[in-house]
Image (cartoon, rainbow, N blue to C red; front, side):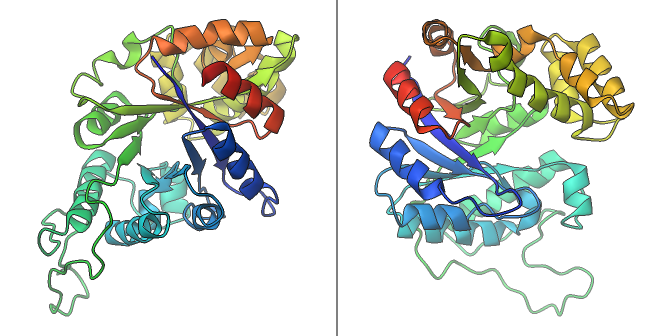
Amino acid sequence: MTLKLGLQLGYWQAQPPTNHVQLAQEAERLGFDSVWTAEAWGSDVFTPLAWIGAQTSRIKLATGIAQISARTPASTAMHALTLDHLSKGRVILGLGVSGPQVVEGWYGQPFDKPLARTREYVSIIRQVLRRESPVANPGKHYPLPYNGEGAWGLGKPLRSIVHPLRADLPIYLGAEGPKNVALAAEICDGWLPLYYSPFRPEVYAESLARAKPGFEIVQGVVVNITDDLAAALAPVKAMLGFYIGGMGAKQHNFHKELMSRMGFAAEAERIQELFFEGKRGEAIAAVPDKFADEISLVGPIERIRDRLAAWRETPVTTLLMSSHDPVVMRKMAELAL
């Protein structure tokens, strides 16, 4: 299967990046299909895409991901349809629930019933984009019109003033748990996995059974081209050690649970134990090389070429690169495109 390439620019660190426009322009020149931005609890996901979109012409502009608790569904639809008009139809709307620490600690919103909330959220966005009738939602999470505590009782269903450019603007869902992945396959146009191994397709097979033809799967991969395999895996293991060890509460860490479902339950438990004991270096060292290797593309160029063959046998349609090295971007374009 032909693989598309995407460039993941992520979210800003302590200061705004100075080269994201240039990287997006290079990705467009190389034939990358999409460029992605993210948000955590600092920079937002839409504004950088507008800046990039104004200085590119073909590459798709994707949110990976827009956190649903950051905005009401109507607000997210407004952002997406506005950017879609400005970019002449290049937007992919990637959504995700984030986690309870961010949702309740940063946005001040409840994290309960994430599947039901997501279903309502996507439904409202679809209504806004289709513009077939005034938008209404009887659900408990995003009731429209709102008639709860503090309401004046004057709200009425409204239809977007602006006619969206595309009623079928693609919506992807970032999801980890089996039920969340199944929800993505049921109601969305694509899925953004956290970890995906081309050697373990059975992990998600049941959840993806209801995916429609043309369903897109966009998988992030660390690409590190070097003859030193241990050095190539080091940043992957560091990332996994942090996410599995500490990116979530001890009693409920989605990343740890996913690693367990992928066949590394004992290792995931040990990583978390070490992380919570303050032994971060040992937690990173405890990440199995096999797991880190399966979900990334690292090593000599010939090895990466061979590993790409395995990815082409999967349902994954786009590999989303996190490398911001133009040399690596060019090498991947030569190999994959």
